[in-house]
Length: 341
Ligand code: SF4
Image 1 (tube, protein in one colour):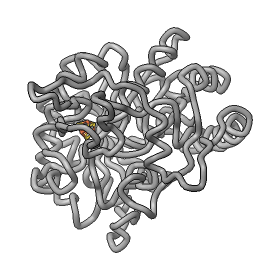
Image 2 (cartoon, helix red, strand yellow):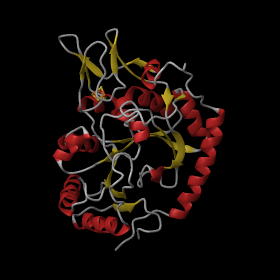
Image 3 (tube, helix red, strand yellow):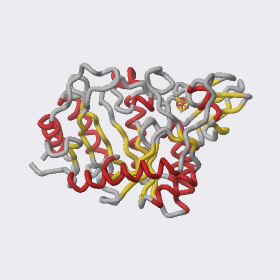
């Protein structure tokens, strides 16, 4: 079988350098959000909002958000499913002006294998998510407003500060990741606009729960888009918080728009690893465009899935071989350095 792995050693070296860089820049640049002891996380984050742009107003005055495919309808004082977009004084308020994770690391770690290999990316996340995956590998940020055990300290930031950090760290791409970028699109697009002025590329690492309306608004600011195609079973998707057809539609419209798409499926043994399901997924991708890269990556027990087993290297290799059988040109058995050859 062909091998589909990047040069692990060079990436590890680059990762070490990235961590040193991150510690250095964070200690000098961004400050933790100041709060008083009586404020909880939700109250703190409400201070870091601006009026939203991605919504319509219903005839009854309620607000319908279209930042993700859930299209929540909200009345005064209510928040959407993601809990970070809410209506106050008749207007939609949305996250802006902080990050809850920031790092410079190899673009291959996103993973993007087909865009500027060997380059660095400035990655950030905020807090919250429009889905609730029980096996989330980033739950400390994604479930911050849903699960009292989660949460990390947010840092105050401006688009210009992030761009400056990217440039000083030699990054070529700005990537919104760690939590779901769609739900904070106003902030992300403002960072991307500032980055584009300096020649930086832009990317989302997302669950793909995107709408046509949002893509019309933000598509011209996006260069690359990684989608986590979690399962090919609609019942499972509904339990995670959306529908299979919405994510498949998201992939299709991004490809149609000419945005570079790479797909990832995190293999969770006993949950989404049936070869029948994965073969149907590979066929869908291959029928859409056989040159879309598909990364199959290994789950590690986390969050509410501590009793699930890790995916093995052999399992990833078998799935990658199946993807090739289904006509895909680029299938990568990933994130088990030195074990997947
Ligand atoms: S981003 Fe999605 S979950 Fe959040 S309010 Fe908008 S439609 Fe609802």
